[in-house]
Length: 349
Image 1 (cartoon, rainbow, N blue to C red):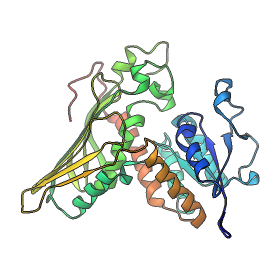
Image 2: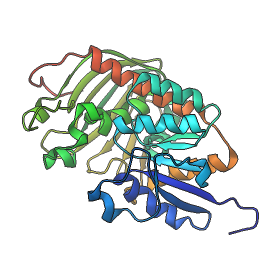
Image 3: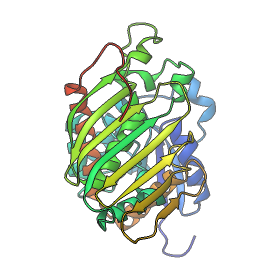
Image 4: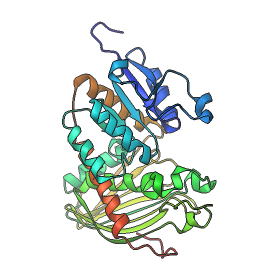
């Protein structure tokens, strides 16, 4: 390690995605970054996780700063993540939060306030892709004129739905469902592209999950069709499902009075395979931008690298957490106000 370079010790909370996506990257970044251990503030790890976890175990009663931890990656079910995130705020511990960050508006607001003085990062990936960066630039340049309509359709059957796994990803009280797997990404990107997003009308349903989920557990919503608006886009329609059978479909259609921009991905991966095509009514040449097919976790690694740099530089990007907080508030508003039919109406954006 070069003289004067600070060694970072990063802990991970989560035995699934957190270990698959982030632990290998931390190990590759040695000696500049070191894995500090598994953070389990609510007690010992479940026995079923033991074979997957290698490294120190940080449990309740152990202060993170006292153990030399510089930051924490929180990649656990949203219902559990909320308490962990607020513990980090109380301890002044930088934290990297997987989507959709937390469940309650109150916790999101507390994190937004903390992010003004504490490095707090989120794992949202679309703003880091070539296709969405190009789309944002074209919108800011008014390349297609005034935005008249935005349509987003994203239907991809999740692993939990395909295999009918009775776990947190399909349970409402644990923060599972279509807004955790797909919807939070879409709402975050819409806010980033067009400004503050508002719910107008729509419906949500858990009918598909409810048809197979055993026992008394409350099924999470698996399908949603929404009408939204934003400062830069007065007419936004969104159709989402993480439970419908069929091939994956992910399409953004942005229509202006002087052209049209479409992002598509026909693969199962969330970010690898995105492609933007833009066509214009004036003399401008059409544009095509593709995201290079790469490791599934590469966008997550980019976000993690930015988080580590923010700790070293003590850079606090409050806007990132404020946007994530607006997404949490919008999801909660949709859950309160959207219609809830017993069976699904037609699925279309």
